[in-house]
Length: 320
Picture 1 (cartoon, rainbow, N blue to C red):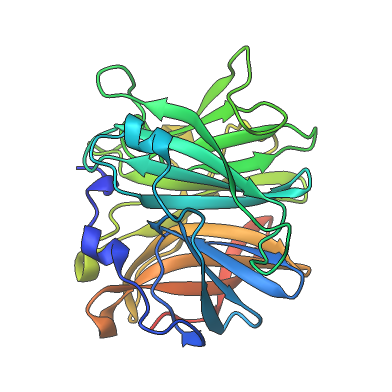
Picture 2: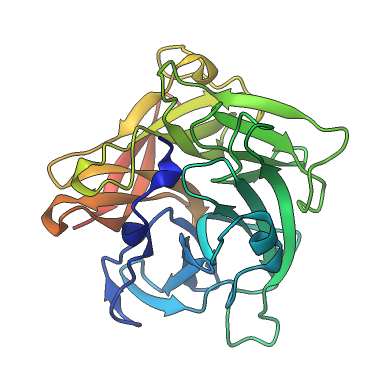
């Protein structure tokens, strides 16, 4: 059914080397830079982290959590610390990670929040503080699924969380100014809804460029190795809350979405992306299922170019 029925073994694969890893295994990546070092956050036990000086050679960093958060163990039956789909944001002088904990095949899910002053593990200021639960979905109560969080701060300085997988599509909610909780009175929006029986959409990511907010998301299925048919779609809006419109003028909450990246001769499917402005470049990261490696999930890095105010993906590092 939903993407959370992922092949657990595929999501948990780890590189064999600890340093100088080339073409690493990765799932659900997001990227940020502190000083001269890039940091990649991915799905994994405790939230996996890698770092690099050149986006080519990667080192394994300590995870965000050395043991499962206690609140997540209480909220999610049989949760053992395998944390999905982190998002990373530098905001108000700290690095914030928003992470997902979920039961497979259910919308028994929750999104939590942790932060640190620095990502440099050798600094005296390093250390993750877990602020715990932000939003939770419960079967039979909620028609949406609380995974795959992305947080964007709008032009007025307000943080918004967009999230979701399958079920009733991609949602957005306004957060408190410190980004730790849902703001009151609550303000919710529906951003993406497909016109398919399974509503196979997940992994939203909003990026501001010029006059527009761009909503990226992944459609169809990940986590099936060579049978994966994951694709990246996009739409744009003048307001962070939407409505988001694709290149054909169709609203994403009414079945729209321009496909900008999909499977090719090298990989079966590609998706769960992040877009980041680093050193003046718009950098795209995602994972792809590599045909030459029997569908292994590998990191993809690209630069983004813009034509008629819509993104185009130009590959600079190919998976496989």
